[in-house]
Amino acid sequence: MITERIENLVKQLKTRKVRHIIYLICFCLIVGIFVFRFYTVFAERNRSVFNVARNNIENGTPVKVLEIQETDGVLYEPLNIKHNRAYISGGRIKLFHTGQSLGDCKILSVSNRLDLDSGMYLIKTSGCNDGLKYAQNKQRGFYIPVSSVSGNTVYVVNGEVANVREITIAARDSQNVLVKSGLQNGDMVILSNVQNGEKIKIVR
Image 1 (cartoon, one colour):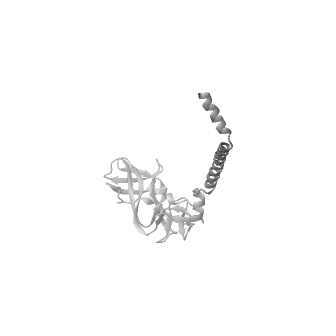
Image 2 (image 1 turned 90 degrees about the vertical axis):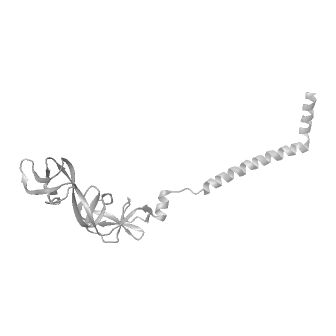
Image 3 (image 1 turned 45 degrees about the horizontal axis):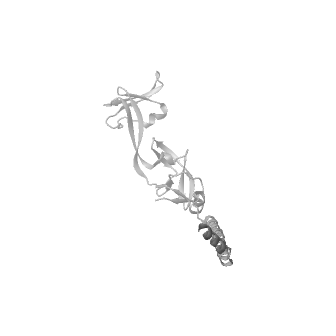
């Protein structure tokens, strides 16, 4: 019984109509595979890939900026105190003066004579506990972050371009720099890493 069915099926497959159907199905499968492959390759070639370098060249490197305004600010100079005494080098002597605040205490006197034993200058304080204190130097001027300064230069916004600007530094601490000259009110100091002449885009 099964053998007869198989023989009938084979006979049917041998007919011209069935063969044409099989050929048509195979042809459609081959065309479908070719079309699908062509479409995937075409779509891959035309897929938009985000390129950071190209985007920066075309639209400008995204940067953060600080608009400069002359203001009253404070720089903090460290002073290590023991028994209400501290010793500093000659290069720092001008940063301290009598009556200067150290937070919860103050400077009593600043010696103008070099201590021969230590090679340092003596500062006497009043009411200070032992440890690190910070003298407050209040001045008016242009304050910018230390991280935005490279040597004696900063980068400022000039239209859509970053331009290097030479500055004169009056004083600094671990966080900020007090600029004596080279900047004016309204200047936009760039806080991001850029190069001179580089096209930029300000990030608000």
